Image (tube, rainbow, N blue to C red; front, side, top):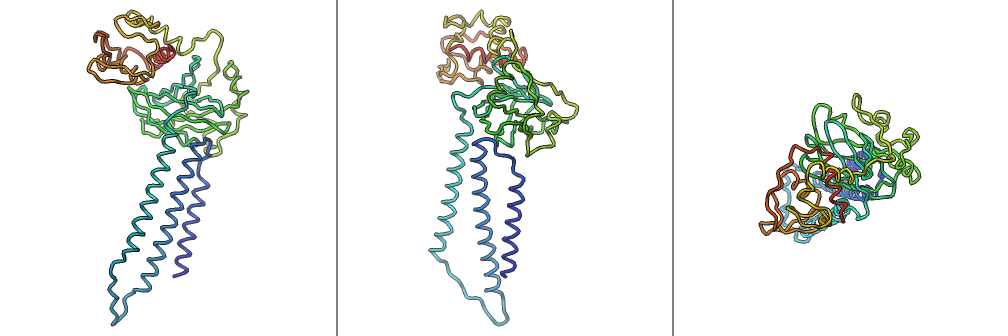
Length: 357
């Protein structure tokens, strides 16, 4: 019995150690928090596993059936029943509370987070920065600075996942989803799409290029960064040489260049080109439609009496289906722009509206 119990414990420890060796690098504080919860769950499971198996073996031996021997009838034990009810309940509340605290930290980006717009499309990732720079496959970010991703899909459902950061979010057509992180480890971190999105789903790869302050400033100024000189991703070394997948675009991003329009400036130009300025002002003047000035992240009352917050998803819906949520005091006269604007154009207009404080 002792030998069987020892073997079960050793197999459990061997499995844990083998799994620990395969965990991706924890490159964010959130990753450390999730790993702590993970190991708490693992060791809690080990303790219960060993205890249950030990009790099972003891009972099998002690109460085995013998000839001409009848097992003693065992009645309930109130104290034991309280213990096996209260202790697991406490553990469940601890797991829930701990997970909820970490989850809240993970989904709520700091107010000073740098925003990057992300477009998922078959089968690549496009990243758009506020200064007007756009990159495919490689997301450039500074270390030790929070970064918020505002994401949408151009075609089908995708899922953005950075294992080293322990962050993942679905990327959905027709709406915006969000995820944020603060990279602590400079170098290359692998990006995967974890939602089947078509024949080349497995090749929809990308990289987060986390740069130190001096490298980040160089990239912003338009200088090309030697990616091969950066620390490789030890968790996924095989993806370093071809981060975008064989046969897929491998465009190298570059920093901002002189004369390049920022994302907000592109949005401003689009509001003129698409005729938006005929009904919406940027200085607070009331026209046919509400002014863009200072409306982002505020509450607005609708014609049906409801109140909604103006965020990226509200702006997007108002562009594509303007009669869905009409602001009180304004006529439902705006035509729908669904299908008339690309993802890039919608993001640019949204960024312009957000910039009008």
